Length: 137
Image 1 (tube, rainbow, N blue to C red):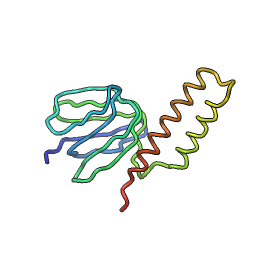
Image 2 (cartoon, helix red, strand yellow):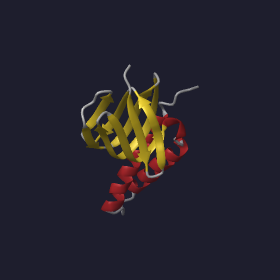
Image 3 (cartoon, rainbow, N blue to C red):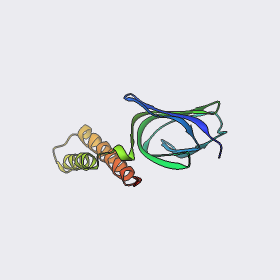
Image 4 (cartoon, helix red, strand yellow):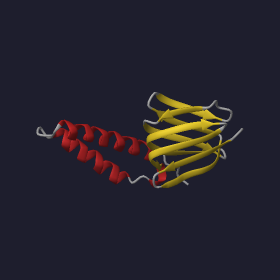
């Protein structure tokens, strides 16, 4: 299978830098699959699972916000947050979801607090879902 250079970066550093056969990632318009030979492209990222196929192996990551671009065959994914499934702390994700749910059940919560709580819950659900994709070695 043909490959393309893929670089995944966050404000905390590089998460992947190598050749890949396929990248599937959630944009704000829906999921996109990128393979070698993809046309030049740029899109904002939403919240969801990213799948990287490299050397015949699939790896899953929780990707939240940022952008993806394809320029002359090279793909760059700049994410606000990106965690590989094996690095996700499920207990932390569940605790974050619970805190968000507590805010939603608070009758005195402000509109801003409710909006932030909904985003917290969505992030926690993405992280928990991706953690469920862990590969057992």
